[in-house]
Image (cartoon, rainbow, N blue to C red; front, side, top):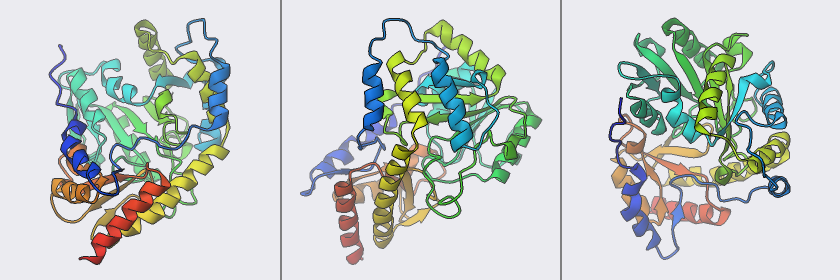
Length: 372
């Protein structure tokens, strides 16, 4: 079927609030979209520079070194042993895969794509692009018989919610009953804050405790944008069921969807170095420890947010009103309306601002709290 008209890009609605925030005497603190502000590690930039003699076409499946690096990373960092290079595939960022996955899997009219109640909007956009329907639900018992694709997101964007091994297993069992594909968006898995995730590894859907040794129709999606400050590189990958990965690979070969060779070389280095990830994690931890109590002092309740890159907060009023109040403090956040119909009183604040800007936001919020 022909592509139906899609809604306007939601962040365009933030323009007047951004102007209000920029008018603040101390300047804007942009905590809205969540684009990394810290530098790309030098060892990754060096790898990119050394690989710029890229005269040949890159491999859609990824170089052998990159595929092996992804396999090794899953075993070392995600507790997922036993993958082979045929189970993994690099992608041009994770958003394009999220948007096109329903189409690439052959979904269409009459099919349902399930996604979380508080959800990254591209899950629904991808369903619309394929002509499928969507259902926002966190309860496997609610998923209908015509469900063809289930999106999980742990840690969640926007709410920072973590799915336990039991939660993931229940979702997989229901997907098996329905004969549906299941894709888990795990891009924030290195950023666990509250117990037990401050000490324990956040589980992957590919963890043997979840799926045993059966990866059939199961995928995990990951991006290096946040943990390695590679948002501008569009460095991501998908792993899981060999048959599904093979199908995606065939389509991507025909369509010319391939990651440039220098970026593949940079990803190999990024995936092999855990030190820079730990450094970035501590930056975000420090910013969160400053911003969260200031937000609470200003009258907001922070829900979930036990992991990930955001604080999901409400002061018990419509999100657009909260967005306006924050803009008058020079702080730009994102309204819950962007993430579905279920959280109209929540706002999302990103930890992706410099230490100085986070400190400025915390001070302004504390001042607001003192006036309550």
